[in-house]
Image: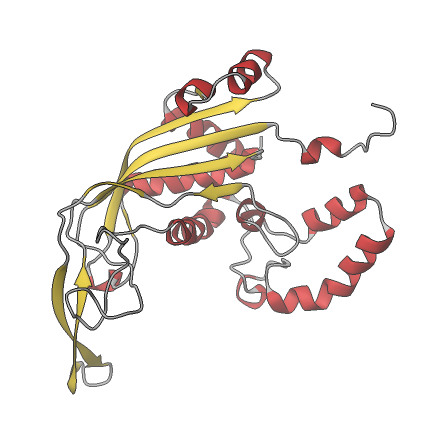
Length: 280
């Protein structure tokens, strides 16, 4: 097209990778509501209007980011940890670093072409923030709230006390109780990756392998709560540069008809991980 920007494809919707899985809690768990519990406990859990537990997408995305940051060194990718001083990785997601380079960024926005702006963002954003987003760039990852599929239909109450770290004994008068959701709760998990790079797929894939083996989520994990694992992981997607997949995507309304099954998730993601680790 005459006059089109050479970077126009950067803004086009070219590929979507959809990951679905069953997230199963192996122990009781809690994501706090910040309010008194429905059982009149001191610390309640997040429940919907029907009294069923909620697994917020924000909690899932935060846990996924933490997992990717933990695995970033093994993959050989950069993670700023939102703290340049702690990570030694310069990234605009760190508030202090962004203040230092903000004038430079604003000057490029005013005076440079799109190519220069994108190059600046690429240079000043760590690999993890390219996936999850930063103040100057939207991320490639979308995480939906967990869709509840099964639970015990009850909330339990547990007692606890505040421990003095010096004496390792309970502090007098500081007893409290809190709500938990029983083990075996099951949610449908969905992750969408829009126009992911090979690096994005390697990061998410490594996190899926970690979660499949078992991890923890929510509050009071040091007390044994929140252990979970993933099962029945499935990968579907659409590559709009493939005419057959493009027509299928554009002419159907149901997700299972629009997206193509991209096969067994383990070899799918293992390939991207191996390429990133080996520098291919």
